Length: 177
Image (cartoon, rainbow, N blue to C red; front, side):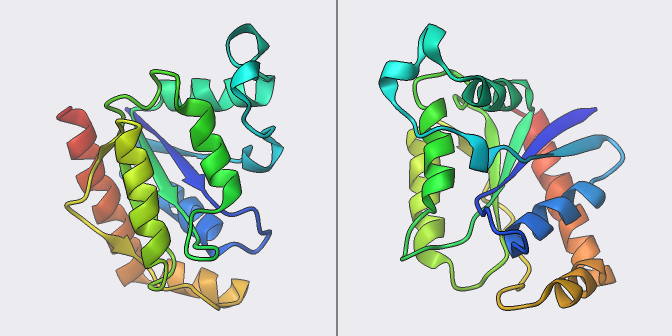
């Protein structure tokens, strides 16, 4: 069983990115377990002085979850042409650890307009030594949709097939590493 950790870079209650990672967890192939990380909003602001024995429990939980995962899925909104601070903060907690080194990762998208954040996030994650899987680009356009419409789009057979295929391809990539 492949264990994949899915992270939404959004803290919004009605986040389309969070809805996408939840739907990915539901559409994973039988040989993959996708768990959704929900601690982004509880992470303290990264401070290098708080590493080592002083690492806060919330940050330790994130580090342990990434370390234990066979791969990481990230769905991220774009704020002011950049990566939201909460997600960047989470990544900062991983920088001086081995959790990200050669860890398979894939970026998925709930908006066709997040081009600046996509590029910035990919650059950050490559710099951290994540092994980015870029053979398949999963984008399901949910931008501006209300929760009932988001649910309808994510439950469409074409969306479910796209999610299943993306996770399957990512799983194959992760196993080959």
